[in-house]
Image (cartoon, rainbow, N blue to C red; front, side, top):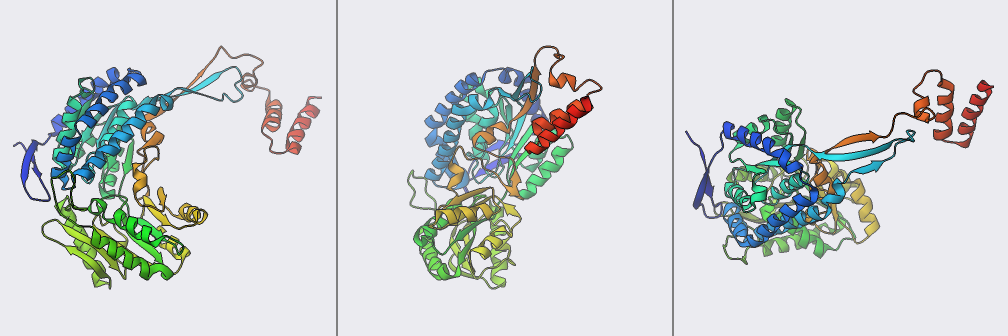
Length: 507
């Protein structure tokens, strides 16, 4: 029996379409088709691939209103937030296209003591890349890794989230608008069973964005075939407010980082640590800011609402579980609550500590927990007391001090005097440490991960007076010792001693 995914608007509950789920057989065929297509795509020059992707960039801009409309229906987010997703994706594509030729160019490296050889490193594509993307930003967490993989010379199979299936269908349709490109991309639709089938179909590389639990399952399954993976996983990002911070700005943009996209961002502000001398004032300002953010749904291009609904109904159970646990252990809600349907008004919670799920596990919802700390040292210690290591935000008017704190926080992406905006910088690699995964998206690292390095050494036959040739022949132990000491000795004395010992033995 054929299974289908229903398109349901989380804001209204309205059904607006459906798509047939891919079977294990169609998933395998998609991977096989892309493997057959790979030689034709990979043999194209980088400039040719960039030319073709330029057409896709044009399509994305032309289809902006349709894209924001689908995201509005599929996720419940505002049309402008949908446009922001597209904006980020287009920006990333433009940067990749402008830099790909330079990044992928064959590079000459030192030949060491092989004086008569020339050595090069050349990066080549993996083959078929599987992209598994999430529901919170279904466009901007699908397209940039897909486009980076394509520019690097791979063919791509995308498995979008079953929670936002209309966006997956949209992405598929967008690629069909560029026939030169469409034959090198496939999209498979479905739930976790389809994702498992994709992993088992033996792609050559897997890039996955999603929860830590799902990432571990994919990594375990990929290990069966030694398929390399990159995992961009969950976070529990800390925000540290020091005693010299601009509190109005910290409250304004900290709250924005906590509540943007209804808190459904892997690098949302999920923990706030404020030094005790500034705690009361900051809390007051944060509550004021939270009360200014309204939740609701509109199909208009300019929505009066800052927050839409929770996109995945299952996430409500996590949010409510974290909140109930915190309240049972003494936390207080100063503002915000669960509203009708899947909506929340922004919540500020105080009297929190690290015994609570709210401060340890990823909430992925519109809650801003604020904790009082003695000083900078305790703030850093608590920020690092987490299984996650994705992002962090540091607030201070002293740039040098902020940099020092940033360097001590165990997070792979840190921003000073702002929140979550670093994700939108195309040239900054983004990814995590610890349970937040590994691998990177964005920037040179984001493109080059879709390649593997190949090494080449070239030249004529070995020359007998080449040092490297001499050392490959028997009877030169003392000479090898002398050369090693003279070339690599760490002091003049060590260099002279090895040389003089050689000369004495020779005489």
